[in-house]
Image (spheres, one colour):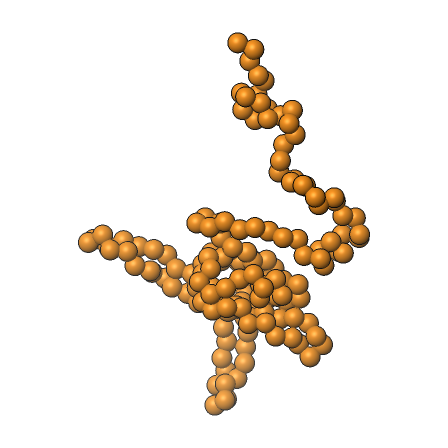
Length: 156
């Protein structure tokens, strides 16, 4: 069983997209996390810097490669897994890596425009909403009043 982990950090390099022998897209990403601290003189520095090797598969891998770039602030959610291997000298090695379930830009200090991919529309069983002028967060004109969102208008 693996633990769920959420990382908030920056990409250390552009995602590297490759394909498995069976044709499955696989993206490798490096996410760096740290904590900002201020010393007695008022200078800021990074503390507890940790580099995380992350892997994304299938559509997520392709979306990472086409959307994310080195230096971008991201929020990543995945499963922490221990990977074991032997190095060229025969020494046993291991590391904790993250198999990503989702990743996207951190909107704390940025904005993003989200576009639905064609594969998502196909996965919905062909049931697509009319996309022209469709905004799921827009309220109907009846709820936008002078008194605020959903507040009754005063006739004074």
